[in-house]
Image (cartoon, rainbow, N blue to C red; front, side):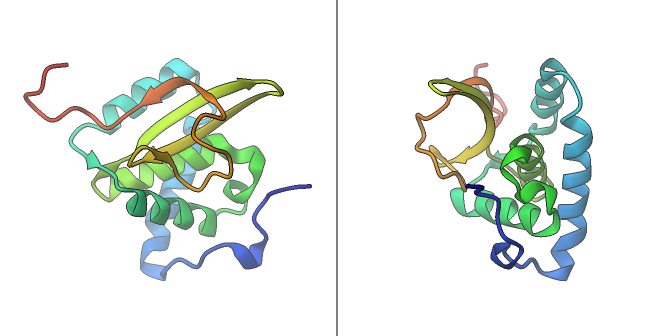
Length: 145
């Protein structure tokens, strides 16, 4: 059984918010074709200066991404969906924690965003996948690295 969002279930997004969401989706689809090292480097640079995103802000960004992109509404598009969500948060001045990870039994890989210590919009519990790459919000300026 597929868990893709039916078109009727996709949340609406205000017309004024559509251009930013579409831009985030386009950038994410391009970024998703790059190596994990390059993705991490780009995200680490892009997050600079952003405040940590709340769960509500992150869910609003994820909902907007899913609303404007039929592709991002599918289970198989976790990487572009998570990237677009993080990038849209950044356009709004915030940054969630972005992850890619794996599960061994049964084997699977996944990409997701997290805020306030919890996965956003995911149907699996927080410990279902083991994070391999994580890009959290940047430390505040002047904080020790």
